[in-house]
Length: 226
Image 1 (cartoon, one colour):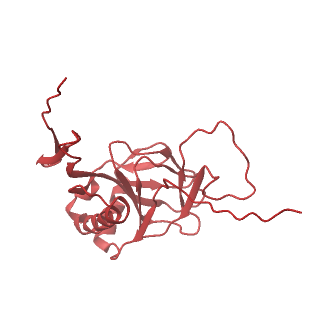
Image 2 (cartoon, helix red, strand yellow):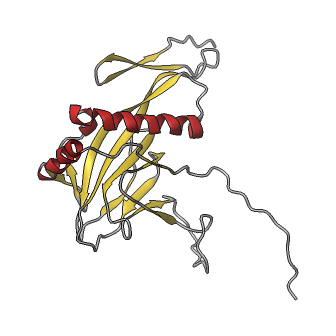
Image 3 (cartoon, one colour):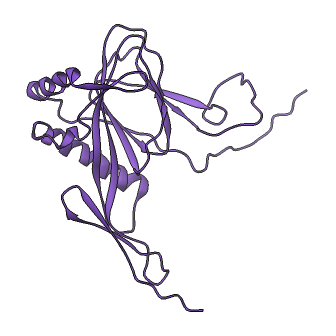
């Protein structure tokens, strides 16, 4: 007879996957602007992306960019909770178009702290976003039941006007698409400006703007005593 074991399992160092809906859907003008970029694309690995990789800097999307920045601020307040005086901002941003028999390869985003995806036109019954642990396991067991502790990947359903935010190091992908619709999304990366660390600990780093789109790194001139 199996004895019932009282136990407790908790997760540590979890990967935060933040999602939220836009408060204001895109206007007809914004949608028209995005659709015209389907003819201005370049080949990605498995699908297409816009040639313009600073798409949110366009004046036609200023209102949308403001909404996304509010989500990013919310992520920082709820997830990172920085003590340092830093301000997040969007660096690069681009459109992705994934049609039938296309996919988006496994990848993560370098030179970025937080990455995000806004879903603009999707099949909510079939389209998904997949996340992968990105780690190599020497021994692999086939689980009876999958859950976040024993799975090497996890997916979430998606819908129009939904924003996902996650650490840029998180590996993610889109499976081979079998449906006829063109899945359209807007992806972006996030960095910060401000002051990190402490002078006395010799860890201070100051990131600030000196010109538009250029980031200036100022390191303290520290004297090392032997």
